[in-house]
Length: 116
Image 1 (cartoon, rainbow, N blue to C red):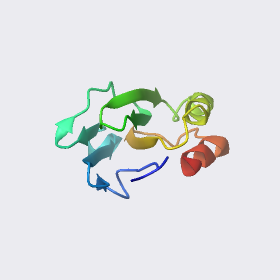
Image 2 (cartoon, rainbow, N blue to C red):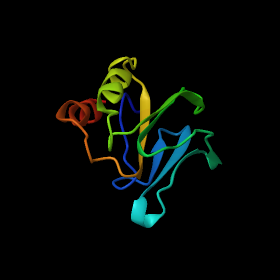
Image 3 (cartoon, one colour):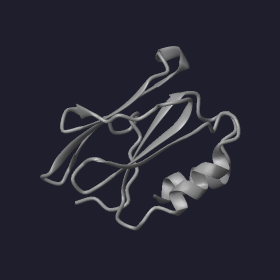
Image 4 (tube, helix red, strand yellow):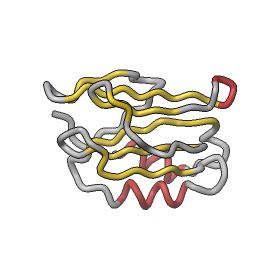
């Protein structure tokens, strides 16, 4: 079982959460279609993806517990840091970047992503 771990699609496109769930994260920049998608056990999660960091938090049954889009190309870094900080220990967190996410990402947001 995983505990409070983030996955970026470019590093890890498919993952098995213990023996319980298979997770897929699709992530694409602007020049590659600017799309993102989260799937659990082959079923796409309904989440309104947008430019920047898209963060999905799963419940233990693989359903979506929480979701946020943070436009870190613009000014979404502070909100991303607050969102990650409020996550309970043991959360399973998935992150997909859509379009552009590094334009104005802060060092604090980068550290928050690394810490989850």
